[in-house]
Amino acid sequence: MPSRPLRDLPRRAGFGLKPEHYADVLAAAEQGTPPAWAEVHPQNYFGAGGPPHRWLTAIADHMPLSFHSVGLSLGSATGADAGELQALAVLCDRYEPAMVSDHLSWSNGPDDKFPDLLPIPYSHAALDHFVTEVGRVQDRLGRSMLIENPSRYLAYAGDDWGEVDFLHELCRRSGCGLLLDINNVEVSAFNLGLDAASWLDAFDPRLVGEVHVAGHAVKDDDMGGTIAIDDHGSAVRQSCWDSLATFLDRAGPKPVLIEWDSDVPAFAVLMAEVAKADALLVREPVDA
Image 1 (cartoon, helix red, strand yellow):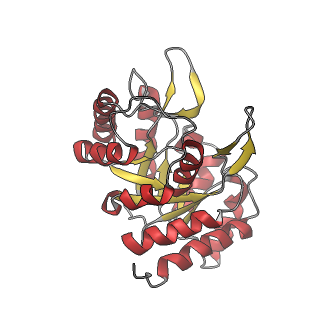
Image 2: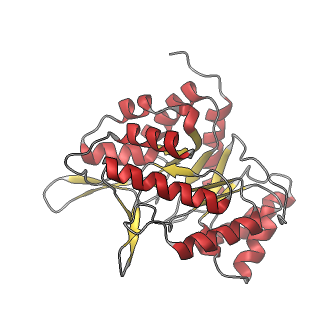
C-alpha cells in the first residue's frame, strides 16, 4: 500500500532538496508558504531509516517529490545496476514520488563505479540497448520514467543519430518521457561548438515532463582553451533564463527545477531563484 496518495508534479518551479535546508522547508510549510515541489537524489535515502527519512517523510507530507536518480547506469554494457534498481523500487513504494528520472549516460564498469555521468555513443546499438534498459526499469517500477539529456565534453566520431533525434526515438520505442536540462544544452553547445538555440528549437515539448535550469562554470583547460563545467554551483546564468523563456513560450508551463548542488546557498537565495522561474511560468507567452 502507498504511504501517501499519488500526486502530480505541478507546473511550477521546484528546488533540489539538501540537508542544509530541511528545517527551512518545514518552517516555510508551517507558515503556509511551502515550495511547490522538491527533487531529491534517491541514492541519498537508500538507507532503511534514520534522520534523512524522518526529514524526508515530514517534507513529503507538504509537497510532491521528484526522484532524480544518478546511479542506474542505464548505458553500461551490463545494463541497469540491479541493486540500484531494487533500492529505487523500494523507495518509490515508500514515498510514491510524482516523477522518477535518470540520465542518458553510464557510470558502471565491470569492476568499478565512476563518480560521473559518462557519455554514450549515439549509435543504433546504443539506442537498442537503452530502449531495453529503460523498459526494464519501467517494468520494475510500474511507471514511466524520464531520461535527461546529458552535459557533454566530447562527442563520439561516427554517430548514427543526432542527440535530439536519438532522444525522440528513445521515447517513441520505450514509452519514456524526457527531462530537458537547458543548462546541459548550454554546456554541450559551448564544449562541442553546437547551436543551443537550434537544439532547443528541434526538441519536442510534448515529450518533456520536467525541465532543469542551473549554473555552470567556464574555466581554462590544459590546451589553452576554455571548457564549460556542469557544476551546479552558482545562480542560473542569464542565457539559461532566456532559453527557458523561449522554450516555455513554445511549450507552455512545465515543472521547472532550480538545480544548485555545490556551494549550496542560503535557503532565501535558492527561493529567489525559484521565484524567478515561477515568474516565467505565469507570464504571457511572447508571440513568435
